[in-house]
Image (cartoon, rainbow, N blue to C red; front, side, top):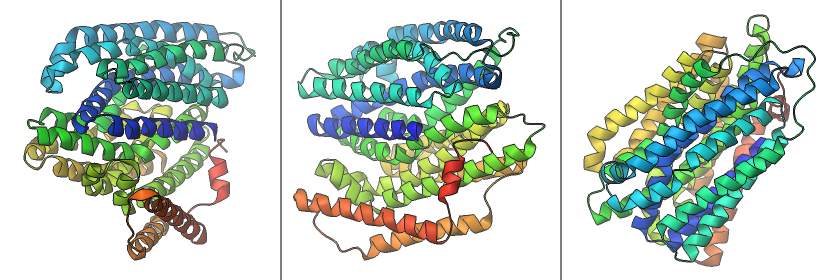
Length: 481
């Protein structure tokens, strides 16, 4: 619950930034900001997830013994943080002109890229502390750290933009927030070390697992960014620059299910890693099946509402011109949900020490996006990008289901898929008969909120009625039974 709440707050903060900047900046300037954010997210999220789980997995495996190698594993994590974060920061500083010119097609963005370069090293050390809290199951502290990070980032970025300080100062808010979060994380890990019940056996190397995670997290973060980066690289007219800004707003909404479901991965990883895969196969199969079932229902819940209300959501959150991306949002929200299901399955594979399968699972949709994007985006631009994301997401979801069946003999029954489909169709039906009203003014905004609420109640009511999900199954995710 705490991790889910933190992810929800992260989304609220992210959309506070998005909504504010779309009103404070021209569409092309917002597109430039978002392109920078997606570009640096690739190496930075690779670093933070690699280090978080490289520290969490070996510590979590020792949890029942009181983590006898607690100090040694943290020391290894910090050394790895310097090895990963330091060179990444230097590369961003040196290569900023090339990245701005060749990747973002805007040489003026070299300065803002250099401003955010230090985040890589800061995030690396921050991730070691997050991984420590995750392994010792201090989920509340982990959540509070993420809440602080997201809130301070939003406040500083919005303040700089509102003051008209320019793009470099706006992105500097992110850099400052990361430093503040690192300082707080150091305080949060005080007194969390368990009391060892056995003697330490010597901390094993993290290099092998970290290397596998680097590849895996690079792919998963490229999945969230590659469509925008491809669009930006082919934005050769002012109209296309604006279109990138509109598309970016829709992508932010489409990422809601993906971002919220990260909480499931963060919760499932240490619990599955702590189970003996050989001697407790039935226990693993049950927990994996529960995780997959809950993931599917929650993704369908968020995606059905986002798809059915795509035009209303764009009108509720953004200036009128951004409504141009409503049809793209309808496609993308399902595509990113497909990614999310596949990535959740991939994290389960990682926790079960099957990293190669995890990499193959997430690499498949990325190859589809890059190949199809290079072929179709130059001509059809944002429309093509949205269709490609939808197709790749569907392919990823199917591949995730196959992986569950082959590796764990677990998965989602056809009857469960039918139940979820009924929930989605019910939402679409209610949205279709909903009376059309003006989306402008306060009354129009309230009408949109009411519609979203009714659709949410519709999905939940049908889900409970057909037993697509029960309260007991949601509670069961908190522990491995």
